[in-house]
Length: 509
Image (cartoon, rainbow, N blue to C red; front, side, top):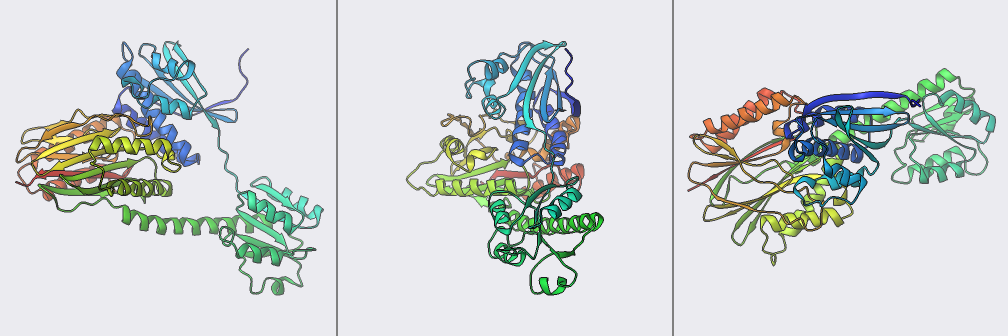
C-alpha cells in the first residue's frame, strides 16, 4: 500500500563524491538548517554526516561513486537526510547500521562511527532505483513556537485569553502565581502575562520574585489590570506593558507581538556585543617569529563566528602550534572554542609531559570522548612542532592538509587522521620534513576555500590561492600573506560563508 504520510522536499543537490562535493553540500545545506531553527548540536551533527557520507562511497566503494545526491525531506512530523550515490554498494554503511559497528580507526571508517552513533535510525538500500540509498532519521521536524504563560485566578478569563493566542503561540495557563512559579522553574517561557489581583501571591509579588532571580529577571512581563487601578498597580515595577481588562483579541495579540519582538531585538544586540568581545579574545594570532621560523597570520570570523582557534606554546625543543576549526557558528562555537582553548593551555602547561603533535592529538581525542563539554564539540585540528634545527613535525585530526610552498609549486602534504573523539586513543601519525630556505608552509581552515556550495568555484579558489602564494615566494612573508588574503577577499566578498584562517611559516635563517 502506498504511504499516505505527506512528504516535502526541503533541499536537494547533486555533488561530486569527494571532499570538494562534501564542502559544497555542507555549505548549501547550512543556511537551510539555520532557517529551520534546528538546534546547533543537531545541525552540526547533520553537517558532519553530510561530509562523511558524501566522501566515503567515493573513496572506498569498488567501483567508487562519482556523485551523490543529497536531500533533506520532511515526512509527516519528522526529517530525513537521504543520500543516493552511483557507486557500488558500500559495505561499511551496512556494517554501521545493520551489523557490528565499524572500526573508527579503519581507513574507510573515519567519521562513520560518530555519524551512526548520532543517527542510529537509518536505512540502507543498495541499488535502489539504480542508485544506493542511505536514509537517516534526523528526528522531529522543528516547529518553533514561542511560549506564553498566562496567570489569572479566573478560569473563564484564562480560556478566552488562551483562545486569542493559541494560533500563534504555545500557551501555558496557571490559575495562581504559585503554580506559575512551578512552571517557570521547569519550563522555558518567552513571556508572562499575569493578572494583578489574585488571592495569595498576587501579580505584583510574582513579578518581584522573578526580578530577584537571575534567569527570570529579564523575562518579558505584561500585567492584566482593571481600568481604575492601572497606573497605580504598575507604578515602580519593571514591566514591559500592561493591558486593561476587558482586553480585545486584537489588542492582546498586538501587544504580545510587540513585546516579544522587542525582547528578541534586545537579546540579539546583547549577543552581538558578547560575541564581539569573545571573538576579539579568540582572534587567531602568533608572534612575528617562533624560534627559527617567521610567522604571519590572517583571519576573519563570519559574523561573530569565533570558531577558529590558534595556540602556540614553547617546548624544551622549540614550539608547538595548534590550529583548530570548531564546527558551527555563534555563541555555541565560541563556548566550544573557549573550552578547547582552556583544555589545550592546561595540557601544554604540564611541563613534565614531552608533547609531540601526535601525543597532543591523542590527548585531545580522549578528552572529546570523556569530557562533559568537549564531548559535545566537533572540531578539526592540525598540530605543528617546530625545532631550532629547521625540522617540522605535523599531525592532523580531520583537518585540511597544509600546503608546502616552493619557488615553483604548491604541494598539499599527505597528512590525515580521524576526527577527535572517534576513539579514546586514535594513534595519530606524524609527518616530518625540513623546510629549505625560501620554502614556506601554509596552514589554513576550511573556511578559506568555501564558497557557499559552488564546488567548481571552490576548487578554482584553492588553486588560485596556492598559485598566489607561489608567485609571492620572493617577497616578504607578511606581503605574501597580504596578497593571498586580498585574493581571497576579492573572491568571497564582504560576507564569507565561514570563519577563515591562513597561517604562513618561513624558515628565518
